[in-house]
Length: 269
Image 1 (cartoon, helix red, strand yellow):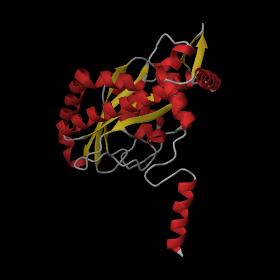
Image 2 (cartoon, helix red, strand yellow):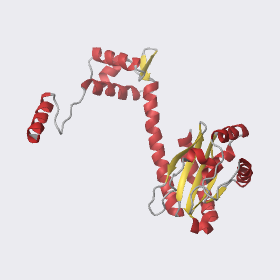
Image 3 (cartoon, rainbow, N blue to C red):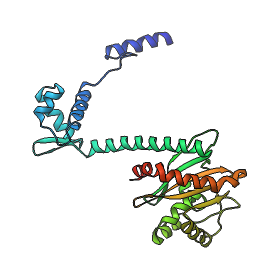
Image 4 (cartoon, rainbow, N blue to C red):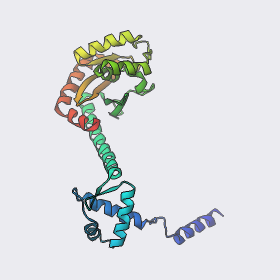
């Protein structure tokens, strides 16, 4: 019976125009995508007749698809020509963002291998700590996020580095939502202790943290300039390599000044 059911399923797929190796393609979708590509090739826009010629589509079909794409926000008509609309631009930005994240992940991987450390890039965006990228090297694994990084900024180096960059009102609002709490026996205990720590971070332009978020791990983070956004590069090491922390952090700063800041800026905006 199972064999018969499989044969019957294959027969149905053939009747419906499908096969295991050749799935059904929706022609109207293909034509719409060809039109979007044609419009994208003309930054200043193109009229319907030109787009029909370039795509090889009949003019009535072209008009129909252009009206539909304009209604859905993928195209916009202005002064008789069609340009990409907000919906198409949003897709483009998403794709560009993924490529940029891949670039900075690759840059962090290179830095991690050179420093023999796990490396992180984080930003403070819309009231939250956002870890944009982190190395994934089994030889130097990153800290396991056992408590949400967003709610424990006071306890880890990159969070302290980001909080130190905020204005007083933004920092106060953040701590009202995420109060200081002990994560490990080494964590800061009170908000006053944290604020004193952040003053030190601002003066030294570096945050050092020893087993405050994760036992057995020491971390450091440096602020980086990315326009108006608060951002940080961080490293983590096993606690028994505490003696390396300052030298590795200094090397990270030099690498950031040379290459990483440009990539980070493209991600954060």
